[in-house]
Image (cartoon, rainbow, N blue to C red; front, side):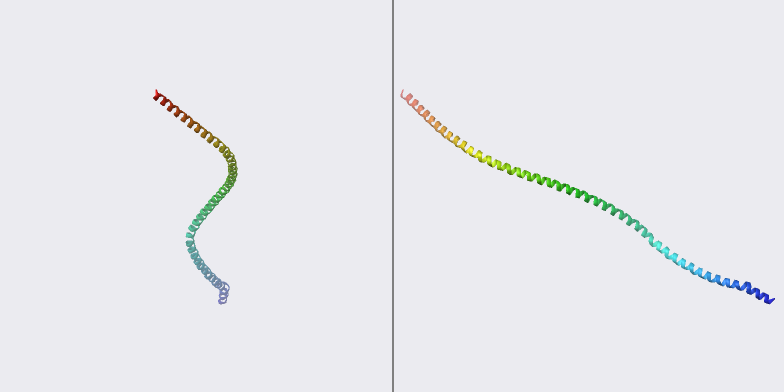
Length: 164
């Protein structure tokens, strides 16, 4: 009986000890895994706490990026508008420059025509002025002669009336 009890002990209890020992090793390994998981959880919680402000910062940076993109689009639109205005002003300047050149040419032509006309009129004016001067001289001599005759006749009338 003792032998049976020993055999029974060997067959049933020893495997249980082996199983308990194996499970004890598994429990130790799982406990180590649990401690490692707890440590990693703590690290991750710290990282999460550190990333919360980063989330806010990311939101702020996204808003700044959107503002910068909007400003760049506005700047590009303004630059294109300014470029169009410069092109238009250059075209207008070219047109005005051409018009100014045409007007300058017309002005030179009119001055030449005026000079030619003035020379022609100047000669005619000289002839007319000379003839008018001659007429004035003749007229003034005629008036002087008439005045002299009138004075003479007054003197003659006066002297005749004195004699009577």
